Image (cartoon, rainbow, N blue to C red; front, side, top):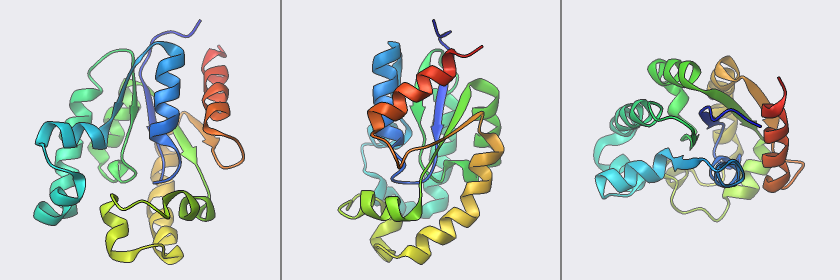
Length: 173
């Protein structure tokens, strides 16, 4: 049986953090949170509007505060925003308060998974530009790796199978 410790999912957009997170929470009888959805719920505004009004820096500030609050809870699964790890404070909080799982995926898979997504603010200005994803990967992948307790690829299996693999890894002593 898995101890009810916090599980924090990090990784790039399109890695499956929200979908896998919901499945993990359901299978482990834990509460699920998606940091982006929680920001929208708390502010009454969608992420794109916050980006437009406050810029990425304003959004990241809100995100840092929210993740700090959510990670104080016990027995949760949290899907973080892809850029949340840009904050050193957020990286420290995630590392200290739970198991950090980096959901790794290729740029090609990200392009496929996000091609119809109209809600991601960072994609609204650049669209489906592989160079944009490469730039993000170069900046963020080392940060995901820095805090990851577990790294698991998500591109070769369904999200349901990935969730089962994560549970199996968490069950190991």
